[in-house]
Amino acid sequence: MAEKKSLGKEFSKGIIAENPVLRLVLGTCPTLAVSVAVTNAIGMGIAATLVLVCSNVVISALRKVIPSKVRIPAYIVVIASFVTMVQLLVKAFVPALDDALGVYLPLIVVNCIILGRAEAFAGKNPIAASFLDGLGMGIGFTFALIVMASIREILGAGTFLDGISSLTVLFGYTGGFDGFKNILSQPMGILTLAPGGFFVFGVVMALANKLAGKKGKSAAELKGCANCPMAHSCSLIDKDEACKENKKEEPAV
Amino acid sequence: MKALAMIFMTAVLTENFILCKFLGICPFLGVSKKLNTAVGMSLAVIFVMAIATAVTYPINQGLLVKYNLEYLQTIVFILVIAALVQFVEIVLKKFIPSLYQALGIYLPLITTNCAVLGVVLLNVDNGYGFAQSMVNSVGGGAGFMVAMVMFAGVREKLEGCDIPKALKGLPITLIAASLVSVSFQGFTGVVEGIFG
Image (tube, rainbow over all chains, first blue to last red; front, side, top):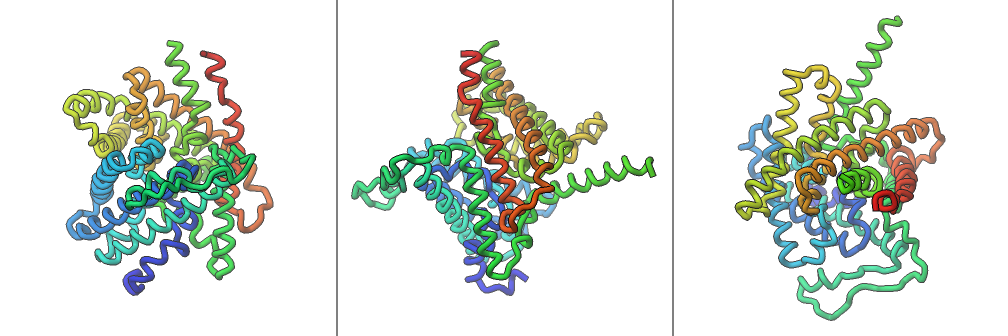
């Protein structure tokens, strides 16, 4: 079915209709952790998009060579190699971002968006479609991160795009613009802490569900863990629980 | 000893993996619907975290640091963890079937759990020695368990509530997680107060 879609659709679906964070609920850990500041969100978004596009292309190119039994370890090796490259690039060119992202930069390896797209799309589709799928999903991830980070940074810290010069320098801009400061006189600090992350994510996801619901697509369709590469194992647990409960009930019957 | 106890308590309370560091959110949201699955998953996480640390520490010190290959940490650690989980699964199935029955079903989920890779990388970042790394890993796993069990209780209550349509499912779960997380913010400074 995916092959019938035009290439443009492969690209655009990731941005809103199947937004990996807000609709497919993948990659929640980096979303919550990194969305404290917009600069970090943009940096994380670019890094993850780079890994996603590269790994999608390579996995798609190798899809006929990789035996399906060892495909997950093979995908992980490809993804981990690209993450290592991105890690080295960030360390070399944007050390401030490396400090800000800390352990979450290497953790892109286990970001389920990337493994999820490899498993659900790149392993079955041609290279051009996989490239666009990766790019669209990456931009959708970055978009969701920026939305969350904007809310948290403006309300929680009273700044916007603080420290952006560390990223703009890469593109040759040296105008000295380093973000807006002191937007709020008394920011709500808790939004930059862990509870604020969960809260803003919950509210933004509810809004996305509401908006998508208006367009006629039911939120229930895309909601939940169905798109997670680990969903099969999770559903096994639920089944296992059901079995155990049935067994307990049996002797009583 | 005091330092180790401090690392443990910090990992459980103030630096809780799920509620403060956002590691392992997927199982937190996916497997915390019932109390017994939450406990089973957490035990499996503690188990794998401890073994992963015990295996990756010598590999890191004896191989990567010795030959200046630290940049390979990410790729080596994830492969070691993935292989290790498979290996543990096979060994448990063969030799300790009772433990396999309790934890086996959770093991494949843990390979790509960011908490496991996260704890190994954090141990390296913090420059912990072997004993400190082990304590940090077990503490992190215990903290994972505390958060999972508490949250499973909250979610069981949430099942019967009348929730607006747009908030149903994950959004309300995340907002509930936010409130649980607020309670953990209260532990800030407690560990320093006891041991410091």
